[in-house]
Image 1 (cartoon, rainbow, N blue to C red):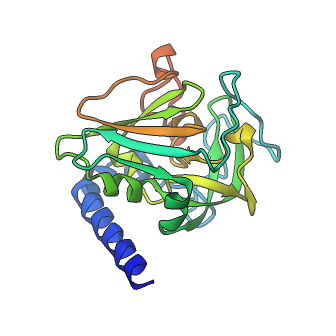
Image 2: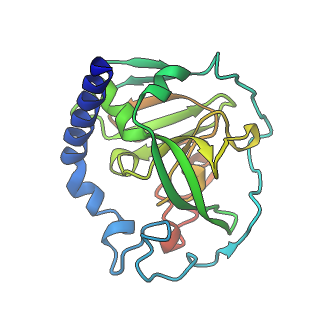
Length: 231
């Protein structure tokens, strides 16, 4: 148990050092730096309207994907973190569950104009997993790869925010296959396409590269409160 506690403490220390390097860039992002705070979740809207511009609320959770819904049992699940890193890592399911588990409530905004509010997530901070791999000092971006061939890019200042999770549980239940289970990335301060379903690899990059939808005309920045849908 002491060894596990020491390991978790080292991960937290590494994550905090990584976030400290990117603190100024994170605070300069629109969701934190615009005239009124534009965070997510009931405790973070800070008086903002309930919904971003041109969004409507849904109680359902529509399913959007590339037409492939890979079923990956947790016994075969793995996540590689590689690219511009000092220590490439590959996590099995039990490795993911051994990391600090976070519960967070946030909103889910789809570029097709629906929003599902107050979703209760459980998972691991993406920042913890990135810290394990020790991104190179000149790594500024990452690409998330899904089992279905999907790709999506993020700048590190967005990826390291504490509400960006590798989520495996939602509203108290394991994440369903159609929503990216057993594990997906969620990016509450951006439109939801910036979070890859069925995530299998996170590639750190020195230079930005467009993902699947960005190559097809979607915004490279994807800020819901700025109605930032298309390039």
